[in-house]
Amino acid sequence: MNGNGRTGAAGRRLMLLVLSVLCIAGAQLASMGHARAHASLVRVEPADGAVMAEAPKAFRLTFSEPTSPLVLKLIRPDGTGAVLDRFTLRDATLDIDAPADLGHGTYVLSWRIVSEDGHPVGGSAVFSIGAPGTSAALAPGDAADWQVRAAVWAAKVALYVGLFIGIGGVFFGRWIGDGTHRVALWSVFAGLAAVPLSVGFQGLDALGVPLADLASPVVWATGFSTSYGKTAFVALAALVLAAMAGVDRGAAGKGLSVTALVVAGLALAASGHASAAHPQWLTRPAVFLHAVGIAFWAGALVPLGAALASPVQGEGSAALRRFSRAIPVAVLPLVVAGVLLAAVQLRTPEALWTTAYGKVLLIKLGLLAALFLLAAVNRFRLTTPAARGDGRATARLRRSIYAELVLVLAIFAVAALWRFTPPPRALAEAAAAPASVHLHADKAMADVAIAPGRAGPVRASIAVMTGDFGPLDPAGVTLVLSNPAAGIEQIRRPATRDSEGVWQVEGLNLPVAGQWTVRVDILISDFELVKVEDNIAIRP
Image (tube, rainbow, N blue to C red; front, top):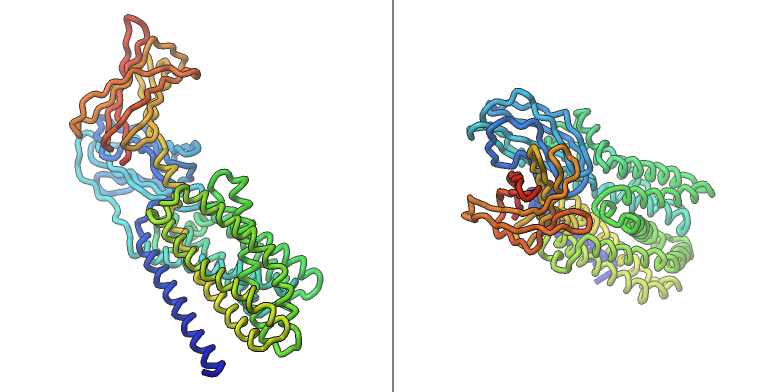
């Protein structure tokens, strides 16, 4: 078979690989249509399914991490909606003022908030006043959700191309190659187009509205108001700097290309899964180093392959030698940072195959294994003879570099799916979040926290105060839990005061999830016992 035939066969195989990866990515995206978001609801008051004798004066939403409200609504029994625009946000707790004219019937409290890592969270709770009735809740728009998710994913991939292939390619052209390749510039322009679109798509996803609402000003304002807005602004600055560096062939162009590369790393460290993880003094620099390493490697592929095909004597060999000396400096921090971030996000090895995030990572690791194997062959078998001018080795190396490029693009497509998957770290933090309730009476009150707030072995902490929030030193405290719906009668446990004055109950086991009745018996003196009681929601 001649060289053109071999190249055509290789090209067909690479295209088949790309199509396969895109099909896998599409299947993963479809399976994530109802994936849990990254901030999980810990408690809602009134509780879902609660029947109240009187109308509540306020609603409370408690999440597993800090959030910001986007849309808060109350659906009345007649199906009409009221926007709840009077609220107080305290870290992960949202206190919402209830309308004053709530009559009997069933209501739906609906919310849509954005979590600390920029991902929207939506949900609803149904409660009744007086007696349960009917309520016309809004049906979710699954078709619109699929379209918006596909748009978010496509914009993410295009942004990766701009930040990595574009900015990395401009940097290569200014420091290693001989001028900026047109593919790098076109990639920068693709990124410039993707940035504003991605903000709009972020706004659509945050508000839960269809693609047809893209022109709405509130959609764009919402997109910019999330943590992703900061990333978009910094990414736009990086791409503009890269475009300027691409047309300036002097020393200023070199300086601009370095600045663009650094700013691109800062953009990706500004928001997202890994950047929101703790400790951020470690994770944000790791994201920065990972991003810069990717840009250096991915951006070099197209111009390096073009240089090897150049008819100018020695141009490709010189660029290849310079790149070969520099690439280990970029790859080492890239790998170390990637391993660190994966460990932070996964927490446990089994999360690789038990969570959507882990499954995406497994696909990415498979592609990375192929990429590093190919890169090793290029480095240790083909680079030296190609640098000496061996035509056959140079042709093989050029084809192999383009194969690397295809794998890199496939990795971008897979990595963009993480936008829709909560990392195991976030799931573990949500699962460990306590369930809490405030119990109030005239003479005494108690704040009860059960950690973790899910069925199984738990620990209860009880802080007691007087009815007007003053200090209280009771003679004893007893915790009483029951779940009548599950046939579980009272579980009584005496509490022990710790060194900080908080009463603790160890060795509890709540066998089922659901609404539990929690009562605290506070022995104020030998002759006075105060009992405060309410319901607490225990998660599965």
